Length: 97
Picture 1 (cartoon, one colour):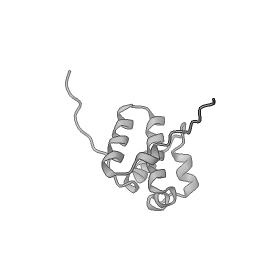
Picture 2 (tube, rainbow, N blue to C red; picture 1 turned 60 degrees about the vertical axis):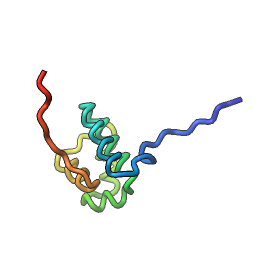
Picture 3 (cartoon, rainbow, N blue to C red; picture 1 turned 90 degrees about the vertical axis):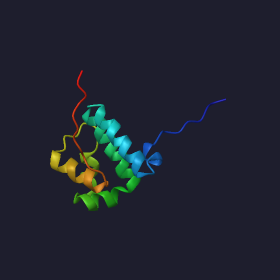
């Protein structure tokens, strides 16, 4: 008997502000650009790509391109996307060793 599988889609589970915030924070902590872009894309998908594109002032295709793995979006683009997702970046000191 062949097992049926489906692809995991994180966007299906990003259903509250708290979950979205923790998801993006965890992606940032990985210190990997592609991980962050993937997380932002998941959240944008959960919120609706068209709405996020409009709120960020980007075209829908530009948003997809900016958030795909390997993309090199500028800080201004990331800042617009993050703001349009309803979250903000904050800075805090690292714990001392």
